[in-house]
Length: 76
Image (tube, rainbow, N blue to C red; front, side, top):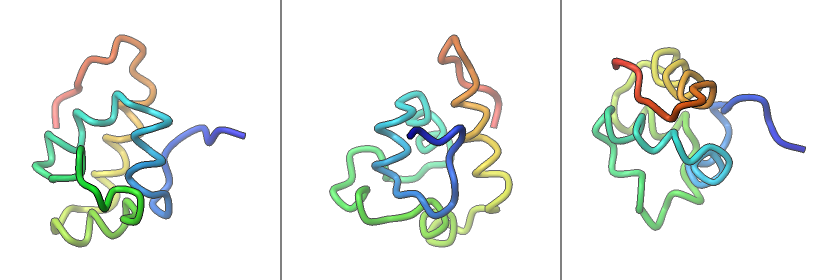
């Protein structure tokens, strides 16, 4: 069953597979996650920690992206 929104314990690959439009969020936060061979292992929480991102803000933007039907990036 599909998740309704991304969770911090999910891997980057899971999130990108389920919500491809979130790629723009990873890029906006200047992560190297899109296209990274470790995406299947790294959780969103680990990404936020590695890039010194605020967990809440990062997750909020990912969730926003999943709810954006036009696949348009919101301001970060």
